Structures are given as C-alpha cells and as structure tokens.
Picture 1 (cartoon, rainbow, N blue to C red):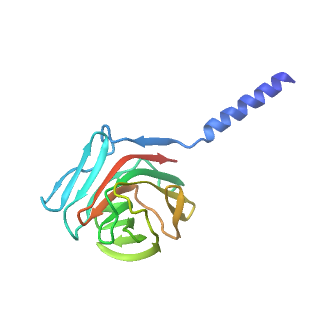
Picture 2: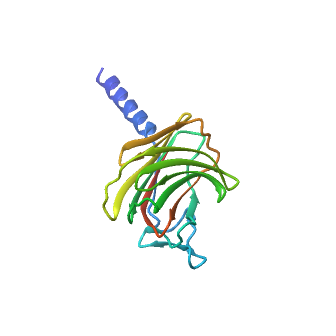
Picture 3: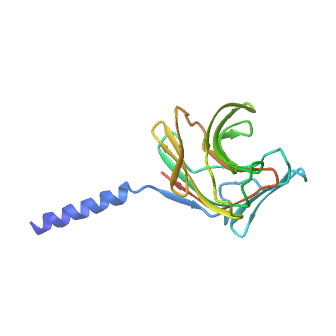
Length: 198
C-alpha cells in the first residue's frame, strides 16, 4: 500500500511539473531577440540597450519612436507577456505604448497611455482601423514604475497594469509574434525586463 501511495505522489509531482508554463525572461543582456537600436533621424529620438535595460527616448512632438522584436511565443495558443517598465512622466500629450501582433510599422495592435486614459488601437496599412478607450487616473509621480501584462485566453485579450485588469477585448485575432514599445512627445520609457509565459 505504501508503494502505491509513493508511486501516486511521484506521478502527481511529475504531472504538476509538466503542467507548469514555460517562462522565458528577456533581460536585454545579450539582445538575443534582436531589439532594434539607434538614433532615429537625429531629432526623432534614440533607442538603446544600456546596463541591461531598453531605453526609448523620443524628442519629436508628434512622431512615434518604436522598437520591436519577435517574441518566443506562439500567438495561436494562450500566452502571457509581462513587461516591467519605468515611465518618465505621464501627461496628456506625452504617451507611451505597448505594441503586439506586430508585422511591420504599419500593421500592429497597441495599448497606448497618457495621463487620462489607456487605449487599444488597431492599425492596418498605416491607418487606425479600430480603437477602444478606457479612462483612468494614474499617480502623478515622476518616474512611474509599472508592470504591464498582456494575457491571451482563447479569443480574449486582457491588459493589466500592476495586476489590475484595465481592458478586456474580444474578436481580435493574432497572427504575428512581434511585440514592442513606443514613445511620443519628448517622453522616455525604460523597459527593465520582459517575461514570456506559455
């Protein structure tokens, strides 16, 4: 009887270990996922990996400064992506954003933030073809540290900030594993690390 109990316990432990999600951490130490870096046209801004952090600093009032990589996830299956970020300061005209389902600079989804709202936006061929907005009031701090989490569950996408769900949307199929970040209007965003879970 004791042998059967031991075997059952070992089997349960093995199943529990196998059921755990695979988590991959990108700490930017070697840029293995190919984040694009550089100074963009001098007056638009800079993207650089410095001391194991991804810094995106825009200088232009209107143009978005974007960086991306192709994430180690299968977007047809459920997944979770968590980014640990530091925002210089949120204002009405200073935005930051999290990009996903990225194919190229004109075809992607994103969540964008300013002082008053979070918006989901969908772009096709450089045109915004759909959006959804959620009003929110952030802390007024300079150097605002946040945890952004995108979760795909079946046909739903949920976006959370610091563990609180901000937006949940449906019927937004994903085709591409590209993810990224952007800033607009003399804004700085620092990404400390990203965790991919599937």
